[in-house]
Image 1 (tube, rainbow, N blue to C red):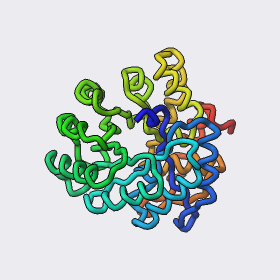
Image 2: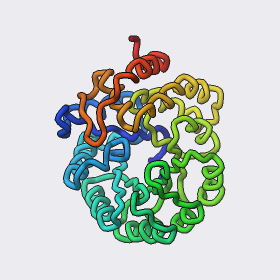
Image 3: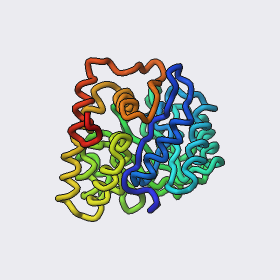
Image 4: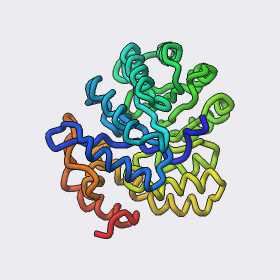
Length: 295
């Protein structure tokens, strides 16, 4: 769908220091993104700590995000699970709450075959009539959905795209050749997002956009318009963030940065912990060099 494009932030889920959900900070974050021209919000994806929210919390955060956005930009709900039945229920809930689409990560831990992946996604797409984006991130899930499987799925009317986060440029190019006639291809790698969009990707589902939404929006816009010089200039400016935000497991560093910026409280859910202080200076310098902070 054409509404899914540009800088698509994989937004964090704000929490209080005791790990409970912090909807006041979520409201402030959403306004921050809309004011800074974020194109799409992804609610409760990997960066949104989907793995540590229970079903009711998961649905509640998506519903609240949609209510707070008020239709100003599209909201895509993260509804993937390693149980097909749970993914169906999460996707139904997101649709009933008014999500514009859903992002479904490959089932993790149980390591399905390619045929299992095909049947998993087909079952969800058959059961819930809402635009769905596949999400391949083998570094997180230990499951790598092959381009041939994506091609089989691309003909389903409800499967409209894939977030490809394997970090393999050859794989990404192959997906473009095989599947771009039937679906949108989104990059999940901030570091290569400018070149990916220049090469024809529809947008970037981004961690860095949590911290620098305006620059990420402009970078994606320049790249989609073919303004390679300006896209690369902004990407070079943000490159230190692209790297530093993964000094520990995502979303630990990005939550530290948002807390430093005064946008969220110091809250994260176990088994994730607050960032080790040995990385404080690294992140401080990254924020300064990227033009996000003066100190």
